[in-house]
Length: 21
Image (cartoon, rainbow, N blue to C red; front, side, top):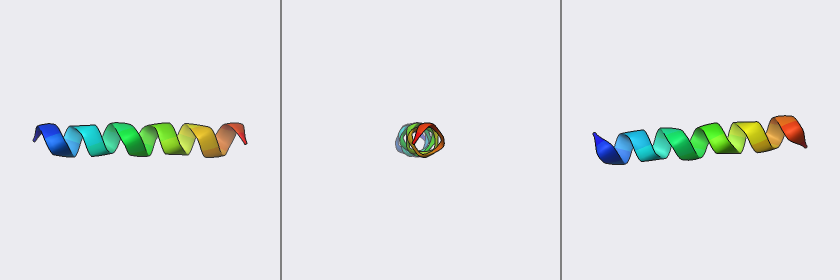
């Protein structure tokens, strides 16, 4: 569960970076 949550966090950050680009 922790790993899955961490992956989701990374994906969220990636999406934010793409949006800001």
